[in-house]
Image (cartoon, rainbow, N blue to C red):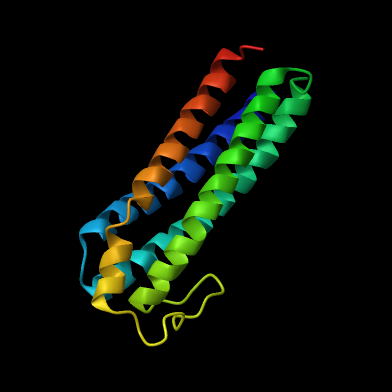
Length: 161
């Protein structure tokens, strides 16, 4: 049974990372897109990936915690370091990404995630959209998420402590 739980943990991790991959590709595509309707379409597609991300995260955490108990891993440092790294990376990503992409959605005329599309009053100008689209934020988010992922994978495979 332990192997099945680990399988579900890995499956959740793949869903979580795949959904982030879709959002990351969208973030970089937005950097070169200036047409407001195309930006809106990209942002709406990315928002679908966020739902998949949360399903993957739920499976990842539920199966990971269960595997931790089944494998008697909670006394080891690597599992705590992995969980701590995940929490820190998620917090940093949330703080950096959520307000930024909320502004981007509003500027492109897309509501969602509890936000109305009229956060820019008067409507966002082309200069507003240009400033948001050319932001270095996607690079920062990719670096934080990528480094966090590498650290977690190393901790889980090497189990150094």
